[in-house]
Image (cartoon, rainbow, N blue to C red):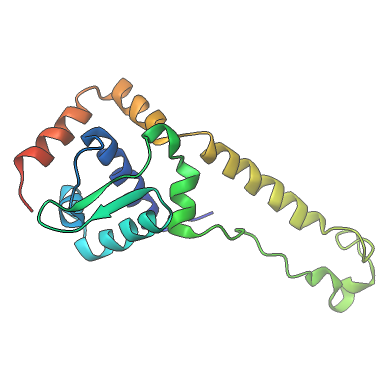
Length: 164
């Protein structure tokens, strides 16, 4: 399964916003500048997060984005669904009923039985989704803090000391 780079950008932005706190709105251009990313594309990801209720945006000179919910209430699955959509990754088109396989091969089974390949793929995708849903932005922050204790402070300092 392949996700577009916007998912990575969105998760990092949520993590940075969590470290900056709920009282601080950060412009999209500043979030983009932190990773040297295109501001317009970062803004597109942030707008998708806003539509999903993950971040809120405020306009004006002190405007920008902030988390709409506590980091404990935002899962990786929330972010992935906001950026990628919630459509199933695998789409079974029932080719088992076409051509020579339509007569009831081992894969196709009878016409009223579910496709074994679709069932297996769906089971794997559900496990993947459950795992993403079990991890919050707060969990990611805790893991980063454990492995790189100065990371949050570096982010706070950078966002406090730069103007974009």
